[in-house]
Every structure is written in C-alpha cells, then in structure tokens.
Image: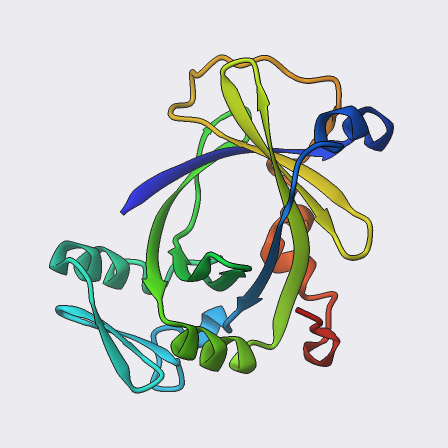
Length: 200
C-alpha cells in the first residue's frame, strides 16, 4: 500500500508546447468499475484473505493489503480502476477515501497491482466508464510533472509529492489549481464517455 498526495492543475496550452515538443507520450486507457458494487457479490474484483479474485482468477497479494482494503468497506468515493498503458501492460488500482491534509490537499490510500493482459481486457470490457489520454512526463527543477492530454482536448497536470509540506517550483504552463475539485478526477471525467466510444 502507498499513500497518494497529489496536486492537480489545469494547463496553459500555449506555454506547454516547448516542454513536450521533443517528448514521446504514453497512450493510456483507464476503465472504472462501479464502486457501489465493490464489496458485493456482483463485483468482478473480490477480496480474499490472501489475495484478489479477479474475473474467476486468483492473484496473491500481501495479507496486510487484503485486511486494509477490507477496511474501506462503507467508505465513499472508492475507486476501482483498470489501466492499460500501451507497451507497459495492465494495472489494477484500488483507492480509498481521501483525508484532507491542508488547504484542501488530499491524501488517500492506494493499492496497485500488475495484472495480465487477459484479465485486464476482461475487466475493461465490463467497465461502464473510461477515459483515454496521452501522458507526458516533464522534468522541471527537482520534480517530474505528469501532463495528460485527453481525447476531448482537456489538459491536466499532476504532481505527486512525498508529504504535505513538500516545497516545489511551479512551471509556467501551470494554470488553475483543481486539486480539490471532484469534477476533475479521472473517475468523474470518465462518466462523460460512453463504453462504445473506446478507441485504443
């Protein structure tokens, strides 16, 4: 398990080009399973004492992770995400409810596991909502910013930090802070897309 502490910003497009013109993006598709089914028999991902049962297959994970994930039951805003990064495989990510640290900055538990292509595709086909985007990783000063360009033209920059007191410099392509705006979470953005629009 890890703790995710992340800043999120809208991007000033005209200032971004000089940072990405020589970079190759990763193409990403993310699907989201229904969070209200996660701890029910309907869920495609079931928590066991020693692992995860996913689409009738078993994946072993640390027992401590299983126990912590079970504690998420009853929380709001649980995220169960399947991510496919072209040429880099499939990941299953489970995120718990966030806790406010300061000025709206949120920390949330995150559990992430590699899964096979077969399982990943099975899960993606069952997702009702998804997003597609290209991700650029931009080194600026001592940090690496992740900039996502979505299919509809929206551009969001994210910076994951090790602690709430971490100090960092802001590049000139950074615009409005939307770290606490739920409308800009990937899960909310995915609800604007229909399953049959998937292209990747």
